[in-house]
Image 1: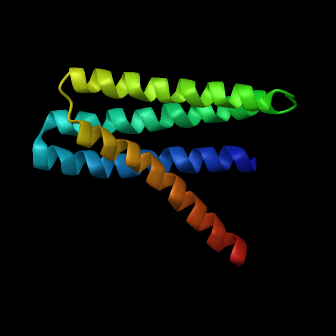
Image 2 (image 1 turned 90 degrees about the horizontal axis):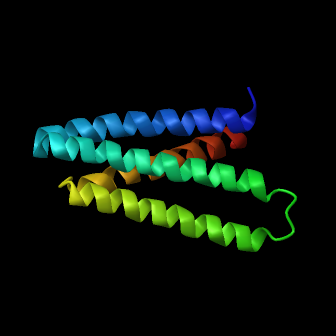
Image 3 (image 1 turned 120 degrees about the horizontal axis):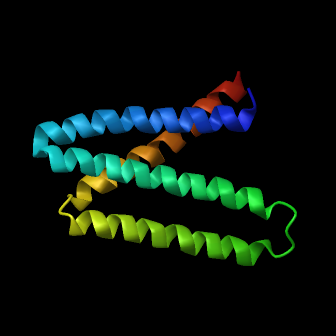
Length: 121
């Protein structure tokens, strides 16, 4: 399997696994809205991750990469703000959405850590 496909698959699966644990904990502590908030946050993280992958694919071979990179960066944060704002408007706890978003970020750290350990061997 291609290294990038393997990395993306690992990150997505790890995000789902961590989010499942976080959502069950949120369900137990705060109820269904917090549980769904975790999934909203995780989905937001995965959407941003896919936007980064798409942006990097379009930047290769471009002379004006800095401008396109900055536009992609700004667009990604607009998407984050819109999703989190809508979730907050619909009364999903912002903290639970952040927990879900951080589940995705944790999956990136886990991938980096496991790859670093695999390369040392």
